[in-house]
Image (tube, rainbow, N blue to C red):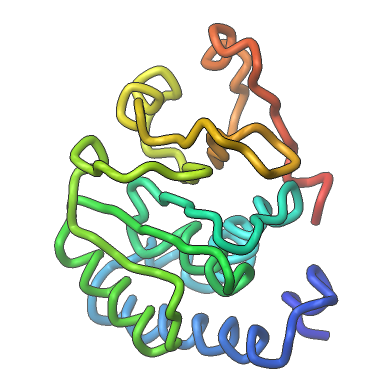
Length: 190
């Protein structure tokens, strides 16, 4: 059984095809440019794509929402989430040109109309978003400073507008100053 279909039974045939294509595109690009660790490419589906999709186990982004992916690197978590939520707008940002080149190519190959990628430092982004997503770019205190003023105050989701930050390890010390934070353990969802 397809790992994406078993994890998300309501995926459309088009989404399943996009996830299959996504895997092949990353394998192709990783041979040219080190998008993800070469030793990690065999675990692409679990460590990168499904890991990114763990956010979709917590929240369903509503149609018309805007999501910022800070430090997207090779497009994680933004591209998998854009496939999962085709009616949600995603902005993927990174300051490294070669990574944004790969991300733009993958977006075009998958014909994703709800995503745009920008080579820009996140601090320079002037738009506002419902949520900001990220995979372990920096510590939470510094991250909150980077995205200051980028989250919309009007909320229409299950959770208050804010941050979904994918990071491993013991985060209790890092999050002690963030009283309204909640830790979701990914292993509870997959």
